[in-house]
Image (cartoon, rainbow, N blue to C red; front, side, top):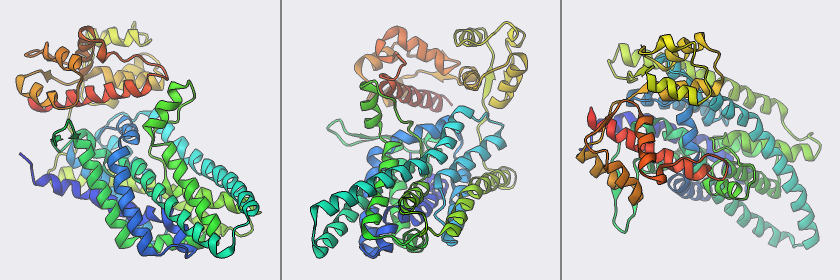
Length: 495
């Protein structure tokens, strides 16, 4: 039965989506509208359509990284995390600054982690933080190279001015459509990523073996919210990006949009990651990168290629200050908001889980290369938070960043019960026949840890085997997603 109160909690995510559309549409069409090659109405219509398509079709890739950084495990906490990010983005939008939505939601998640005493995966955080530097630099390099090559090609072709103007307008529209698709695919995780662990919707089945998962339904709602933000409130920021950073020619505007779109696509495409992995090439991490940083980097790249004199540097410094302030502000708003939600409004903002150091958990630690000789005395200990268990074990043995996350993953205690009812629910979620048949063999059994069920499934079917390595990354991710879904269903149905 659908609970109408879910919409109330989801409203903050929809507000964040609206804020993202109001702010980040400028990164897709701001240069085109600012150079007066495309009208605002045309830009908003195209952007709205393609951002929804990108979110629904390709939104899954970058959303997984947010879950690693911190899995907000109660819908009240998800509400406040999204609301904090949305308030920050809205405030920056009022100031006309193209702020990073990615940075604000990261700040909110860290704020939730601090409030709930949850361990923040430093490796995932550093991976995301690195993109805050890589993204604008990469966009600037691509823009400079693309602008240089495009100018050479245009000169050699020798197109007439009127025809060139028409071609440029068409190119800006096509680039904007690609940019909107990439924006939806990469940044939808910022809008609804914090709601994925609580999965408020049931899977929809439309026949012909076509299914719409709970996450895809969230992506669709978030995409629509972004589109509404584009139509209602994006014009001011479009003019900031389009005119105030630097006066762009129509050709330069096209280059800026294309460079921004390429960068977002690179960090969102599971298909590209699979292609690179299958050809033994280095893969690009699937993380939500800043659309604002990408387009500002592109404009600066074009400006630097021309000597840098036309760039309005004071405006650039103002935008960079906004980028630095926004995650800190979002973190503080989230922390304070969670306090009031829990203590004043009596809402559940976090679920309490136990972290058990059992004999089996210690064996898992040992297989992962952790020295367990000094933690034997903790056998049988139960901890109330992920940070507490990490601190206790780290006092006994020096853990690396990766090992700290391993400690959290293996010690987390979730009672999973395989019943006829939840097997029927899981049957509809796209498991292969061997995968489902192997799960069915455990009907009536219970497990204290998710990894116990995972290990048992591997013994029954090789279809559950996580092989590791670059070439198996996409396949391994799909298996982990299926396991996470199964754990969630088994635990939810057993409560």
